[in-house]
Length: 272
Ligand SMILES: [Zn+2]
Image (tube, rainbow, N blue to C red; front, side, top):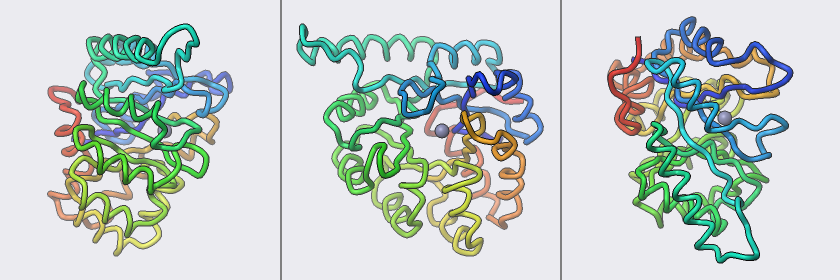
């Protein structure tokens, strides 16, 4: 079974055709059984915010094919009239409701803050309590930096983290060290074109070695539907074919393409 753990509902005025049905048609063409939709409820995504409630609605439209994460901006509800605890309680109730509605993870977490900003730490802790893995983006201005990521992952063993993007993939040796050292740290292979894809395409022999060594910690993801990108660049099919042609052992291929996602995200009874 193939699971794409990193999909977006484009939600852009420039790409009206990109709705849930279109996303599922891309999955069909690529042979992807189940897709995980990541909302991004922070302006750092660009002009077009992607809301959790829209992701949940898409899953209701295709309950056998789509599942959703939930997303809350850690900076929300800053109020001078109430203590921080009041804000956190509101966020907790919101996440609780998202879990009731079927959300199975948190993210894409993408804020122009240090990764270990206290507001984000509160959310990571909460996600651990709800058993929601946190999928996050890292670059020089958003959730910076990898030293902070390592401190958080090491200090918060009760929360699972899934890394994504250039900050995570820029150094394959460091990534392998982190995946090996921390049981609660995972990575997704997105984006198809760009850091995850480029890192794995650069040296197929090294990529095979990396994937075999970290077979239980890497999850297939494409970032298809990310807004603002040239959509054809993010068709998931060539990326599925890339993994098929990489010469992985059957066990590693199955784990990376879906087995790890099924285990971590408890995806059962879905797919074609
Ligand atoms: Zn993304």
